[in-house]
Image (cartoon, rainbow, N blue to C red; front, side, top):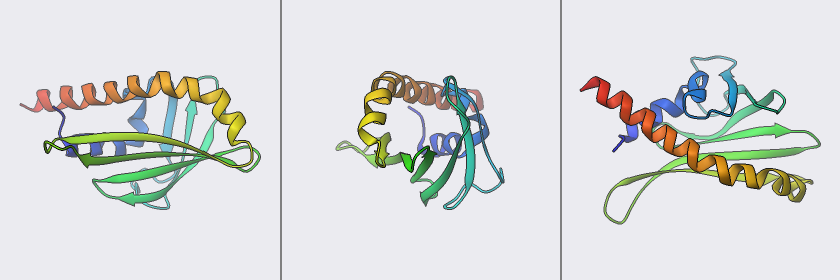
Length: 137
């Protein structure tokens, strides 16, 4: 089982998101040393344009929200956070929220892709974290 600290480190390593999100061609922060609320970065997914994002919510080691700025005053909030299960295990979650005047259209076109890809991304993240921890032991 991957440790929360390892998962957080992987989330905070924006330039290496493609290790577990294979749809990404690249991702980076304007200032790679600053992963915190207000940080600005860019992502480029296969078949999509380069997209600006901003970290809008942040608590180190626990959660962050990445707001992607889309055309026509639309945005996509990607929320990543940890919570405890009923038996004390740590659960990591990745939520997607569409916002703006074209929410219905964006949902229609992107929902199927997110439903298919997000479980794969989360499983790859878990595997990358477990592999890194195994290398240290």
